[in-house]
Length: 292
Image: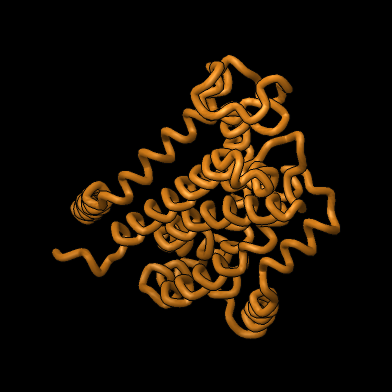
């Protein structure tokens, strides 16, 4: 009972240290605040605006911001930019989050198996990872997007297919460093199955790097979705996304610059905020910062 109580005390102390270090990271807190505000705005904002994202008013074409009830102006078809920006934010954030989930699941599975099993299994899995990494991911992404129907779900899957390799390498290295620890050796002596040791014993102890990788993967997925949509291979109009809003604005940079500035700022804020959160989590979860 004494050992259990001591372990619980250490766990509480460590978690408190992690929380305190994260809360002391000002950029991470700023990123978290911006993501919360952006998520709330994209979720509830379209219901509070006077115009729908698909409503066309040709008489209000190229209205500048803060005119005629259009808080961020209108586009070449007279559609409200604010409504389209928030609806596009829903799509971009959902694509980023679900692409992150898929890539984390795939990368973690490959990394745990390769790191724990070793031998020819690890060699085959990691050489497969190296093969994917040797091919520029953006070209692979564009090729897949051009070959497949560019719906939001398909773009999510395509981005995940080009993002799981980095996660696999991170997890594989972490598992290799953990598999010879005492708690793993004790599990083997107790006759626990390989699956139990990999996913119930080792994986929880490797969650720190995985959590950091997850936040950075969301940022990368949002940027990739904007990139392929800007090039015309991603989310297709009339469904809005930050990328295709930029695509439609490039010929009006001189006459209606807000059409490019506003979605560009949204992408910058979202990507930077997730990167700030990732940096804060990395510093908070770094055991080298622990001093007992």
